[in-house]
Image (tube, rainbow, N blue to C red; front, side, top):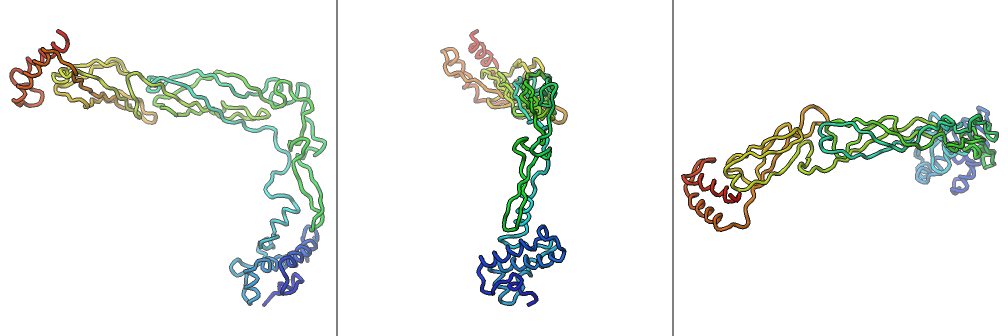
Length: 380
């Protein structure tokens, strides 16, 4: 075996985990490069890390005691950084002890930060959604304080360097540990990490650099928007602390229900109700569409549940050209009560129905009976 890890740590071969850990910590305190900068100690420090990586792991220690190579699956000890990665007390623990947690922000932090996004909901009519419109809206958001121009200090004063951290935004503390003296850093409690303090805050914004105000904005709503569509207005949201850049404002669309049309995607749907005589004889029904008055052609023999499409009379497509369709659904009304004359005419019509004719044509006598039925149902 090339290296005697027990000898490297100076422990017996039957040493327990506590004894191995104590031996490693004692040697690490003596040989760590930040404690002992002598270059000759670096190789020695690599050795004790490799030894501890193996002996602190029961499975690796067993492989080692049986004559195997416990590091074969993980590569040679040390690596480019010169330190092992074993469990217990590894390289990250040592670095944290000397320098504090890794990845923390160093130095003072800025008082100026980006503001939050805001959202407002507006109601629009179906016609406005179909063709687009322009709306004026009022929003209550944070804006830059005009008294201090976002600085947070009262007029005639300014922020001053913190005398506790001397502008660094953090303070250091030295404590003793098994590694010797350890220095840690934390945000300055006096300036909250900013590096500066404001002795006389602005009376208007209380030092925040922003105040709330109501503004009027003009919003262009494109054709084809639907319920839940959000329009982004960049830079019209909340101004950030310290007069920082504003976030975005989102305008969410809420479409009012229409008394005639129901929207399904970019298509519109409506229902027209006809007496059975009109559906049988055919007629023309006036209908007020989004584009103005139109006339629906009801062909003779139209059945209840049939639909008639009016192409290009729906909602404008939000993305791309063109429009959806207007779908007219026909509902044929069957009378629930008949007077004597109406019942007599229907019975005569039923007898004539035995003679079939092509669609849209009437048997002899049917045309006249339908006309009389129509007059009877219309009260003539």
